[in-house]
Amino acid sequence: MDRLHSVIAALSLAMACDAGAAAPPPPGAGRVEAVTAKKPAADPLAGFCDNYTPKGAQKTLSLPPLTPPLKEKASAPQWVNLWATWCKPCVEEMPMIAAWQKRRAAAGAVADVLFVSVDAEASAVEEFRKAHPNIPESRRLDDPEALNGLIEAVGLDPGAGVPIHIFANAGQQVRCVRSGAVTEEHLDMIDGLMN
Image (cartoon, rainbow, N blue to C red):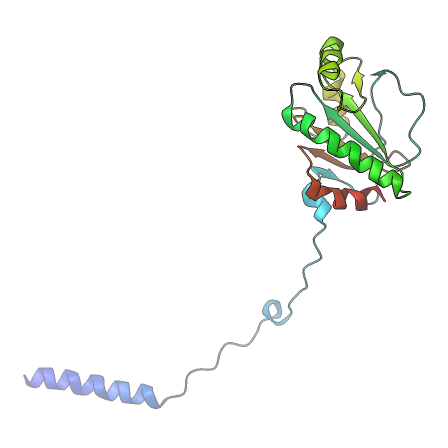
């Protein structure tokens, strides 16, 4: 019992000493903690585009031969939409893209939209257009095998799926490439990209 009293007394004494002592000061701030860097504003286009070049070394848009052929190069910013008749998101977004182009033109902000089918057979596109007259006019890659070369040329992996959106400035310099559908929510961002 005396032993127990001795242990309790020693613990009480130790606790009393600690209670009166001031807490040690926090460690001084090091160089890293002393300076808080501001994060740069995130560019929303960098998240929207799979390949994005805001400035600097941009690739020139060079499309393979199309049917019907292009008569002249675009002189305004251009949105190239690669699509296929069997691609549901492609077909669903086409009327929205065409309406966006009309709204822009009505506001005096011209942008060329070029729909390019990647279907292997021209007959598939012709039959599809007959069944869906509301789908905008489209061209088709003359050689569907040229798709992989085009995809790689704009900075995507060869396995990227349609829809693919290529956005180029008036000088035909590729600014943004996106693999995947676009929605109404993206149109304001695309407006900014095309200005």
